[in-house]
Image: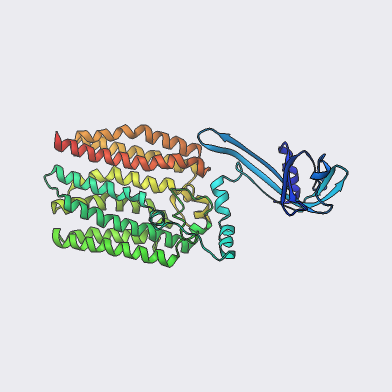
Length: 436
């Protein structure tokens, strides 16, 4: 922050905290009154008692700070200014000329963005002390793989198995293998996305990541190297492919078609030269992979044949998982745009993005209603419609907080929940059909 700007902003604070090193070598710090002189970028501080005065010409620090405690939450309205400069002593007052200044205002730069913009300084500190940032292995695995997003695989696998069970085909062992193979491929995709987004500059450029967007950040924080992440991705893909080959050999070679299609879609999602997400095709790829491909694959493992009903039932799930990616791209819009990552959110206006979300969500509900009307889906799957208020609240918040990533986070979390709850209600609808 420029010194003159700091002096100007200091007028919003009721008092200053004066700090300096005392004659005994210990820090001295206390609150005091001040007057700002914007024209000369200086402060008049005092009155002070004789024992509180620093030595003439001594470097001092003036801190101006404000926070507001919020019960049950923590703090907000956080802001501060730090000014450094020499102090001229005159009787019981000081004149402090501002030479350097730093500061932060939470209204201008949200806390998480503030932290992200200072990652470089944090890493420089670790370098200077000859260390490196570390996390416990379990927690690092959890973050690097973005484990909670496995619901995107679990839901269509369970749905395909539920449809098959309603047709008289089911095996707990086969379900477990399908979940293992699908989850391994999904984790491989998650880790690979981080690798390719780091290579393209999309993640390093992003200073507004959230728990739901912007990648895992483990490469940017130097918790894991790009090479380590690439090796982890390859290992997950190897496990997923091995399980897929076993299932194809034991349940039917038709699974090879879905398996190859799923792997190609997942790799082409961010990997060059395809980079489907950069071309505005990311949502379609995610919807296809975590909708029809996974649901049909799960059904085939159980029944050794494909099913039009399973395909139809997968469509709402495909739409909702595509909307998870779609909404998570909103906070990434500035960074994606800067590196030429032309997602749908980058390509469309704010109004167009919100409108498309509304239309897509409404289409998912219409598909279920139509499926029940045409007797394609069990009547109990209409229970999914209870999530409509959740979808409406997400649209409302998306419209209100489009340009405020951290205020949008609760809606992003609900959007993930929408996919989870809607998908599980479809599964429950089939379970009720079986039981009743």
